[in-house]
Length: 419
Ligand code: SR1
Ligand code: MG
Image (cartoon, rainbow, N blue to C red):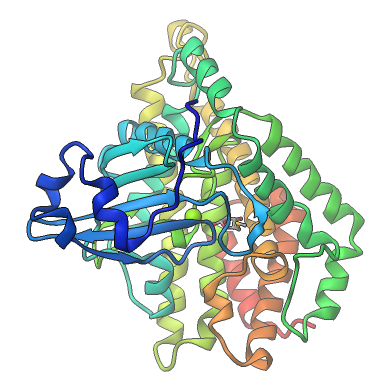
């Protein structure tokens, strides 16, 4: 990795001058750099995000800050996360063409990526809060999860290439550490950065007193930290997806690391479920039909994941895992082996799902689905349903047969009064 000694955070007023020599940028934006319109639009927890607009077009510039934006410079964070984000985007673009924004330029010293401006896409989380539907969402993201999981593993990759990539991404220590703490650990004790809605104290105490629950979460953390099945997006929630009414892209893989195949789809499912549970705070007469659509998205995402994974299993199983010489070449079908593997992926996904449902309500970085419900008296019982369903997912992952049963469970908690 190159030195970042010359790093300087970008500012709208000087951005044109600083980026004027980026190859191809002036042609893409058009006009003189001094005339470019620059807006800072980042609303995430970590980075600066600018839109540059000129007569010929628009681009996005994302730059890492040397600290956590959400907290400030009291929490330093390495600039090298831009390096991993760039490499993750590169791999995702190859493994699932069209899924991520096109990259135009990467400057490692300045920790910045110049990329395609997605328009009229909006952050999926905002669309779900507004009650908007996205046609094809489940199929697109289910396929993305399957393609990145399969093609980033030794089911598909040559071992030497995959092991070299594991070594590359192993250099990323501090970013996974955020997930290890904020997602897997902090929700389960009174950590300093935590906060939760008043009115949840009794439910929170029930979770934190549950020793078997904490042990299950820590077992999942051990798998997250030490299992290198595939290259994960690492932060696949509804804020990492941009969509129109019928087109979908995945953004922001700066948390990319090698880990268990069920992690991304499990985290995403949690964010759909949190959208589902929060809807009484956002919808009126269309509440029931919109909540049912969200459950259809969950079922459809897992269905698309399994279908695409099976297709890749049959057509692209070229790595050292589950080789054809052991199965098809012996006249033995490999479908049962695939089903057993997918069963483990499913159980990991459910466990991660439950944990993510906890951390977004109890840890540092909450989500707008619940947070935008201003009245804590309305918010708390909805969050309580979400917390208790998360608990059942973690404790009973192996008892839930499929996504239909998962959605039936969500309907049960949605009508429940949890205290
Ligand atoms: C301090 S970073 C908090 C959260 O923001 C990111 O989007 C990740 O989800 C992380 O856990
Ligand atoms: Mg992000």
